Length: 220
Image (tube, rainbow, N blue to C red; front, side, top):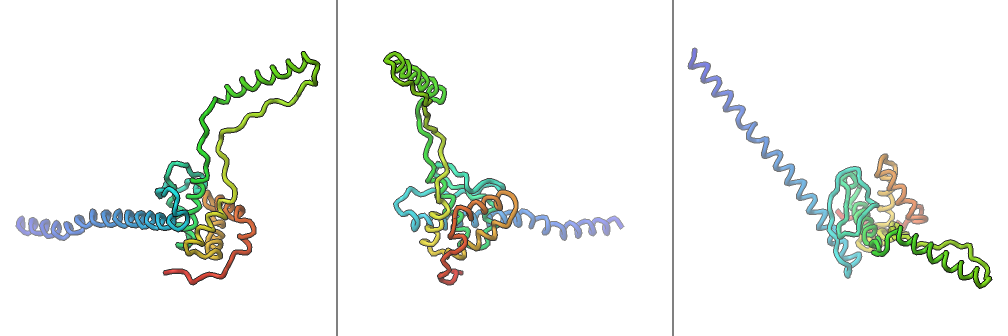
């Protein structure tokens, strides 16, 4: 009886061990697939840049966490593409456009200009303002009431980024009408993707309503 119980335990252990050994392999395969997918996107992004701006400094594509903005990039040589945008893109042409849009947003940012601090500007400008008007009062000239103007060092969002990115996407072999249709699909979503897609459609202007539909069949 004792031998039979021992035999049963060994048999159960033998049947269970293959299943246990397979778990790490499944996880490893999943990670490998994810890395391969990211690498494919980076290679695709590099090719798009060669067509869109062959003489420009190449940027690196980095997959960001879901929920982040596509339209808020930094001029640091990296384009952040949120993971949920990759999943939501209905086709490869729309995804190409999104990557190029992120690129144009990044390269269009003006780096912050180095110079006096805001407080220094205010003090210097005010002193100059008072001095000029004091001199005019002494000479009995009309006193200027116009206050000093200070140039803002904050970078502004470039205009027509969506149109420029769309022209790059078309130059890279994309179809204007299919890209616009893809963005329209994203526009119907909620959260950050829906809100920013609506901004993209707004930036496209009339093209969003009458895109060029003379396109080649989509590549497979």
